[in-house]
Length: 155
Ligand code: RTP
Image (cartoon, rainbow, N blue to C red; front, top):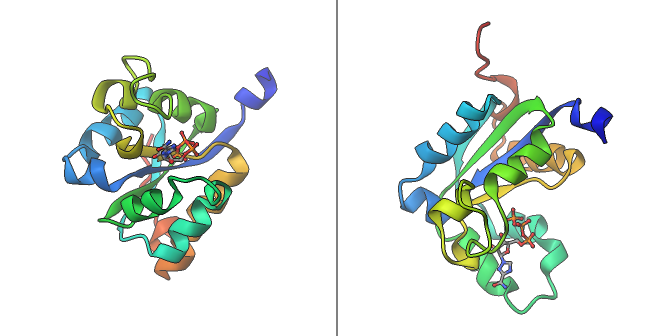
């Protein structure tokens, strides 16, 4: 476990349409910046229905699936790649539990949301999914900037 926590990873974080609409993009970015992760890509993106269905395909049999797809495609999202040691698990901790009413205060969902279906942000649940999800946005937008023009900090 300790070895895996020491890996430099890249995770995909997406501010969902409710977060963008409520003006919480800066707040979300700020929390990841303050934590110490490095922003390597960022894009405002209207998620097509097919990509939303692919992204959430594991939830296809759930009764809330149509509502979830409708929500994710209802307005622009902000897609980001964040890099750092143990970034995938740590991002999930910063984001908090799926149900905002159960998310701890101090987490994004715990501080900023009350509804499961309006929980502000998504974060990849594994390094493999992080790569996959960053790749989708890259492919769908046909825009090399998502991976090839990273805004790295000069240190
Ligand atoms: P995400 O993928 O968005 O980061 O969320 P998660 O891993 O914390 O949760 P997951 O189980 O993958 O669910 C994906 C999203 O579906 C919506 N949801 N609605 N009962 C419901 O109405 C319900 N359950 C899940 C949430 O927006 C959740 O983030």
